[in-house]
Length: 57
Length: 548
Image (cartoon, rainbow over all chains, first blue to last red; front, side, top):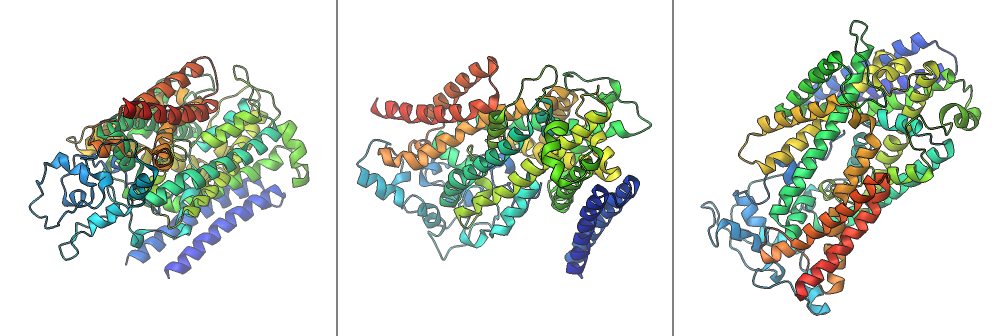
């Protein structure tokens, strides 16, 4: 469970990098980039904290 | 600040004053000569260890003197095991209280860490809030693209080599903290002076981090804060003062409450912060008019690093970038503060892990921050202010803004905490909470003045120049003295509270450095000469003392 949460969190980072590259390539707009960056940030922190909580149990 | 391996092993950081401790652990493991402070033979009641004078090197009846080479070698060769032997002197007795920090004992093999711990820690630790300021300051100093890229590549390489071939070898051989080693060489009174210098410099550094975090407030639409510009030295108004006081107050309160939570959040935030820096840099490319990567090098020379310094700034050359990159962390590599970390390394080769910090934090992050500033200048040609908050917000919106606050928080907090512990080692009777809170107050006061953040390149250079020479003294004492038939660990041998050779070497070399600094020499240029001078004076003065 903990490992699955960490992998999901890492996918958020991959998603953030991907959205940056997509913006630089002109595939997405600036507002989409900023929304995606915020969503991936929230995803990263919530999944990592969840993984931490699961690991403590 | 990824802290998989805690730095709390140092007396300055743990608040354990070097010679004040009366717990049984320090009794059992301190070199024999150190036990005098506890009263000869006055062992604590819970002690059932038997002490045997295993190594004459630490026996106070032998004065340091010039000895035959063979005798020196035999003494030195048995110098390291003495700690282990004293710890194991009574195998059947009750073991000393467990401590995983090993403040005053060598790290045993069972507590040494694998290489991956060091790679992660260095990568996280060197991607901090201040990177948002350093990159733009290079650009403001008119550095060219070639000088920036090659200066960083080679300067960071020198820093990595310093970690690998200076800091890591002594750390993995002695397996003790800088503070403990320094106490053996320079004496406990000198530790107080060193801690004072450390504490004050940490406060100013934390203040710069608070300034960086406070720039995030400027983005809020409902607050009208005049943000500091590059030339601002004093607070820019009441709103700025309130912003810094609130942020500094929160940081100080959290630091005073303890280190665990901050360390945990910092561990979680580190990979995300690295990604934010990288993505922020990538997203500036189309906005700067760089359509594809093949244009990058050509465009970077005119659009990003055009080589024209801002008004009031000296022009930076390759050498400025090279020496700054090498010595911005001089206090921890050539100054040996990272002995506290690398003593946990199984092998000296783990020193290569510092490359993660240098090439992610001090290469990629500085270049990304430079690009953010170039975009800011392109969009606001008359506005030269370096404002990490608005710059990150422009690039990545709220995620970027969050990064500035988190980066400031996760780096200012341990800095305040460590400064507090350095001061607490000087005032051991005060509670850690009160001392850390007061230290946070000092850091917040420093944060009110944008001068420290806007002159960060000079400050970081000075920071290295002041603390790095201590590393020269320890390296000379450990590696060169035996070859010169001089006994190391003067203070431990003589049970002295200070070593005059260390005091003279440090103060004279610093005085020379400050003379040149006052004449306008870039501080990072001075670190190497001052470091070498300090080592040389230490050798010469020690020989003079011993012959006298």
